Length: 66
Image (cartoon, rainbow, N blue to C red; front, side, top):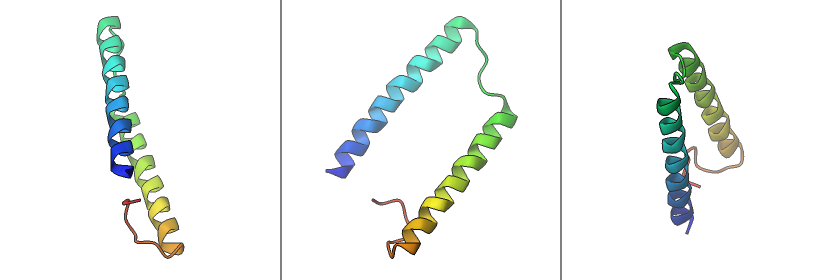
């Protein structure tokens, strides 16, 4: 059941991302600069660590399989 929901969310997100991509290309808007991308990637990594630590503190497996 969770996997079906997760897949639906991924499909929805992909559609939104593709629409954003097309809009940017057609409007000649640049994409994220590498420095911003690196920052976002670091931020996502830190959030992942926090979620994993929270699961560990709750006695749950230290993974993202909810």
